[in-house]
Length: 175
Image 1 (cartoon, rainbow, N blue to C red):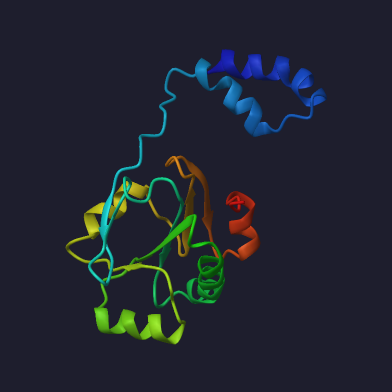
Image 2 (image 1 turned 45 degrees about the vertical axis):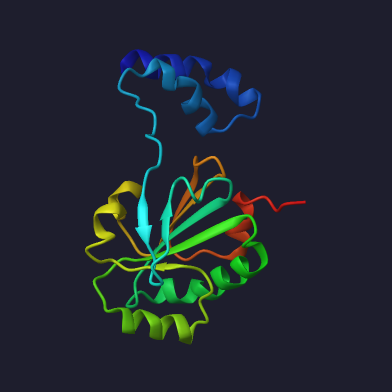
């Protein structure tokens, strides 16, 4: 570890002069770190409230937005209109899955779907889905949103309320 820090310290002036970010330096140094492991390929099978099954295979080719939310979470509810509008305008190349992160009845979820005019699939935290939630990593706060490329690569994870501008930063519109 000490050697890596010395190497990073020595090359920092060179990289800084090229206006590289800290992330660029870390990416450059990853092969030098024997404990570095690549992120495993995403694999999941989720059933939404209408019985539709979503997997890494049938969502491939579109940007995938995974939004962990809960009915008790005020920031979660505040960001729903942004997801509704973004999905309305981009559903041809974006799939949004709202993963409710609490054990709650379908009737309650349907009330929220109606109240907020949610137009994207909602997945219940139930016996069919709960084991699949861990495939997206540890969720430590609400809301948490992950954006995946059409190839299934994790592009970014947001913790906290996000906006249409946040989504647009990582999702490229189709021509």
